[in-house]
Length: 307
Image (cartoon, rainbow, N blue to C red):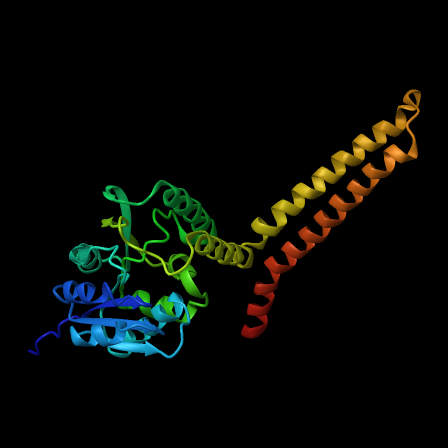
C-alpha cells in the first residue's frame, strides 16, 4: 500500500516596495506553510533581496503591473507546482500571519473551497471612513453575484486547488479589483466559501500604495462594469425603465397644462417640458433595448457555438 502524499500549502505574498515589512511576514508565514512565495510587482527597493535572504521563493515582475497581476502569477505558480492550498496575505504587515492556521482549517477540515478572512469587531483597527467604504464595496460585490459578502476587500484569504483551477483563468481585472473579482468568479463557479474572523492592524502602517479614495473608486468602477456585463437587465434595463416612466409622467403633466386654457399657458412654458419628455423617453427606450440585447446576446452566441 503506497503512502498518501502530503498536501502542500503555499503562502502567497504580493508586494510592491515592502522592504520594511517583508522579512517579518515571510518568517512568520513559514511556520505554517510548506512554501512562502513572494511576487515582487516591480519594486524599486530591496524587497526581492530581503525576501530571498529570509527563505522565500521570489518571482519578480520587471515593471509594476498591479496587485491582480501579482496574484495571478502566484496562482499559476501554485497550480504548476501542485499546491493543494494557497493563502494570500498582504506584505505590508496589516495581517497577522499567526492566523494562517485559521484559514487552513476552513480549507482542510471544513472543506470550503475559499476561506475569506473577515476583519471584525475589536480585533481590527480599521478607521471609520474605511469601514464605510468597505461596506459600499461589499454591497456592490454582492450585487455582482459575489453572494452575501462580509468583507470583499480583505486580502487575507485561502483557496484550495479546485478554487484555483476554477477562478485563475477567469481573472481579468487589474490592480486592487482582484479581491472583489475573486469572490464574484468564485460564486459563478459554484465554489463554497467560509468566513474566518481575523484581526487587522492599521495604526502606524501605510497599508496602501495607492490613495484610498482612488483605490475605492477604481474597485467600485470595475465591479459596476462586471455587474453591467453580467446583469444588463438590472444595471441598464431598470434605470432605463425608470427614465421611461418619468418621461411618461412628465408628458401627462404637460398635456394637463395644455388643457388648462384658463391659465393661458404659452408655448414658452410648454417647450421645456416637451424637451424633458423627449429626453427621458428616448434615453429610456434606447437603454431598455440595449439591456435586452445584452441580456439575450450571450445566449445567442452560446447557442451558435454549440451548433
